[in-house]
Length: 304
Image (cartoon, rainbow, N blue to C red; front, side, top):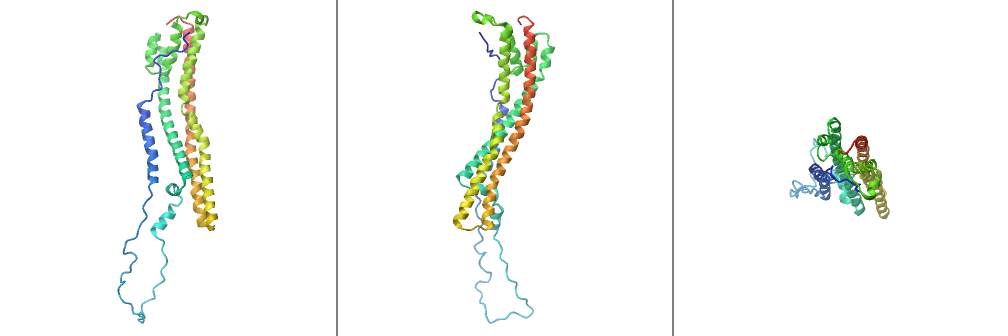
């Protein structure tokens, strides 16, 4: 018995739009990693910056300054520009990458991969759902047609809803022999319609598991990086014996960036999962209603 109709329905071939979106997402995601891998060169002072202007001029130790000339104020130590810039970037992601160990860098790479996958799936799912919604709007033209052939033509090619109708029509016109003849025509059509509905649901659910996984575990991945960073900082402090606030705040604050990055990746994944899941339900309901109507149409009519 032929219970799986393989017609000219919608296929799972990747569209050019999905490939363009994928290339753009991966390019935007991995360009910052390349920048992070490059450490900026330290600013070196000029060769003559440390030499006084009149280094060779003799100085008379017995000479006294004029009475009307005020004594020079004591010079205040200035923080070098390179040191100030290093302190400013101490809590940045660039410093976290350049000074981190294999655990820190591995955790960052995992979270970047999760973010890239989330953006890619969100973009491609939005495009695919838009196509399916546009295909569902052609269903009214199917019911306004005067014949099944005209109705199928109104749906257009590569239409997921057309595959539902073609599956039911194929089973209605199929001649069964042997044991297959014992199964009623209505049961065979119901089975085939169910297969086509499952194909649409599988297409709708593609990538949703990734979004759910990223949204649920990415905060814990960032927390893992934070814990390992704090352990490393405390171990270093214990070995050096210096527990000043400057030695503690820097490494601990740097480790807390991992949790912040994990939350920044997880929140968009949860939002996309809820929004795309809502659109999936609308499309699935439209397909289920259309399948029910087509099944009843073919059950009450003769062969197409």
